[in-house]
Length: 269
Length: 342
Image (cartoon, rainbow over all chains, first blue to last red; front, side, top):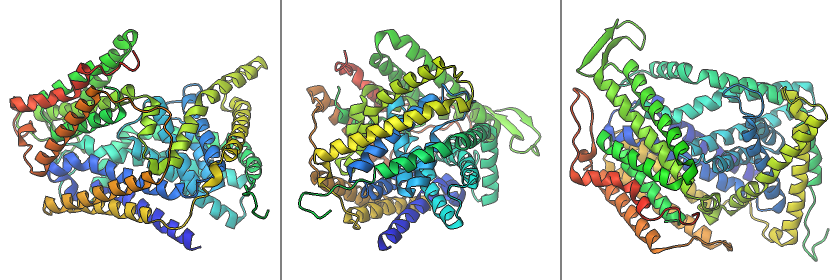
């Protein structure tokens, strides 16, 4: 219980710090007032996000020091990185990506910590495979990690509501994946939007209200990203609707098979 | 120049130059040398295609960035035309200065993108994986397993897909992929079971790990908070030395933590990075450039690198020392960057 509380506190702290850094253009008007701040802004956001990812990975890996979890996650991540390549093969419009459903289902079935690792490590591995290592990677890792982590909370709620195994479970998972389809794009934009804005006064006025600045971001988002994100959302809904049930059944089967215990010589069984 | 640490130093030096200047002359030199290095790193038959792809990307980025700034920013002395001021967001004068500023933004973004593209090109996946600190070895192990399994998963996907198509599965709708995904997942997870048993048999389970709160985690959280606090203080215009002091404490704590954690873990590297004289020379040069520029930024003495087209457009100037900075990303061209694959 104490460990769970500690984990919850750490995760909440990191979430708060990460989200505050990404939302700085809205909540800290000073972010755009000096030349020093405007040039260092994206660097500092990236740095803080990297550190947040490191904290969560450091915390999550403490449970990973066993062969079963390492092998299971390693193979599942390879599979998901392979799905990223299938984006080209599966018929779907721009923005559609089949990687999120496995992240959501892993987090949903195995808990938030596994979900976070699945999301963050999928982005890292597919980044290495596709030559996609860059300043955008920490943002992708933490956001995809949050996708998996939040799915863990969903499991907790569904158990309380006795949804597990019902068709309602899949419907809610589909809705959840649709929400993250939109959120993922909106969060990822936050990393580079202030950088694209560039000059003081370009899209950010000193002393402008939170609502006004939010309106500017919304305009930018509607003009550049909404079509991609809607496509991703619809794609997530379709993939979760068709694939979630059989994949959850596979997880059920392998969860039992992976439950073997290793006992050292001389230890009681 | 093949060592991963030498390329990491190259990355840091390039990034600090890019983030300390908006001078278009310096940026053009910088970008041209990145392109030249990219050509050098590409295999001869791919060079033309690589250059074409990247020139198209750079052109699009500069054009897009210039247009966005031109449409939404209405400051600057040289007015080209105007739209009624009450038009939401786009109303107001359209100026030459905002067009140029947007173009400079495009140059910076293209250079950043190209810098990372070249890092991916210069280092193998194994070298990139090895850059993950030993303190995160379970994650390095997961990454290595994923990278190892990836080709076999791709091959298996192809085989299952072919088998399905022979059986008349048209592979046109999303549901047609269920007979591929399910066997693919089942066989892959069977492999995971075999792998975990094999790891256990070879003694991996010897370290069961601990779920106790660790001092390392506390240091990591504290260091992150110090960086965040330093950044917020700088945003609120507190003296910069306070922020840099906090960054320094955080950096030292992190370095000590990673070093201590890494020393505690014994890892056998079957393939070591080769260190040659050129690697030592390059790493020292890039580190020196990084430190000098960091010092200039700390002392707020980077005015000689700055340029702004506002309020009225003027031709940029650049002192001779600054031209040298533009040449930094091209240094690996002289140091045989690709001999490990030649």
